[in-house]
Length: 327
Image (cartoon, rainbow, N blue to C red; front, side):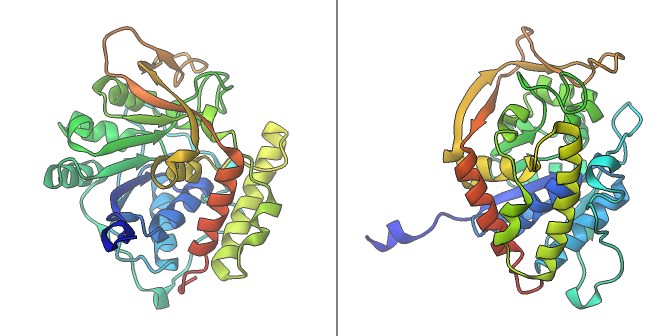
């Protein structure tokens, strides 16, 4: 093997948009510690919990893996038009299940919270580095829609924009046909879909192919951060046992991060769709994705994932993340 073939490709510049609840937390830990990713920044949006919880959780988790250097931008505190609803029954009162990331961790240093709001932060990165930055959105699309409304060309000036959201054929987890991220801010989802701002979607059809049980976390090392992750996931499993009757939990967000950027070979089926999001006042319909015929751009939708391969990959990467020196 020659030296050129042995050289790994450069790390992929990434901005992660999160509403840091339990599954965002795991995605954030993996993104911050994977050598294939150059985590340029994290933008926060209200969704699973209120924005101040999202920002605190995000900053503390980054510090726990020695990544206080990653800028954190605080974004939308509420949806574009609707009242914010959060999910304390799913993610716990502050977004991290049975643990709460409060108190001071002075020995871990500080996180760089930027004064630039998320939509402008996205716009600045995209304009300075056209065609380079990947955005992975793991919550409601409020920040991305705001950027789109401000004239940021997410469709053409990013390398790719990926969203965990919506459902096609799978039963919704918020309404019968609606997934949480889409239902929290349907107007934002519709703005982004209509503008072509989302290149790839990972709906429930894909993310619910993999069920993680507490036994799967037994492979994690015995560190402080691993204990935090276990306590968070234990809460999540309890919710899913009651809500879905499964002995485990769906870890939507880290599954999307891995399947989109780190192990795309684990996506076993994808389709191309022209999608819109229902923005009606009917609470049972708003947030539902449907096929549109109005000539808007298409998006690639992952609909199946290799469950065994994904489980092994996620646990291995999470194990390395919680083994970081600061954890």
